[in-house]
Amino acid sequence: KIGTGGTLVLGQYLSSVDGSFHDISYSFAGDLYQLNIFDRPLSDKEVRDMFQKGRCSYLDPHLNRNIVLSWKEFTEAERHGAVTTESSECTFGWNTLDDYLGKLITTN
Image: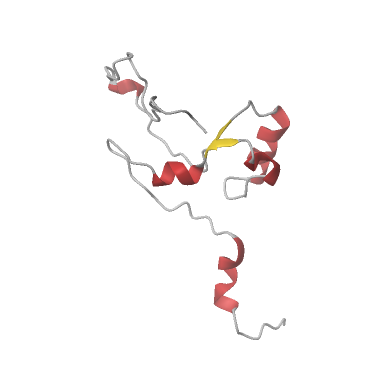
């Protein structure tokens, strides 16, 4: 895990070590989704595979052991500033089958 005593800043360029932000033009104005911080640089192939699978895909299980800060930890962390949360419009796993549970499914 990441050691204590530091600050991780997402979405803003940190102007000085005192933690001040002097120029709003350096603000991030976009979306973050499934952001994970790993304990090593990922290979070109690992990054390409994640990109090709798309934003709604699961992370390859072999990478789970290399996560030092997970997306779940980001989403549960205390937030400061103008942070908004929106639905990712992704559905995972068996949740997509809930509408069919206990129903007869036939083909035409």
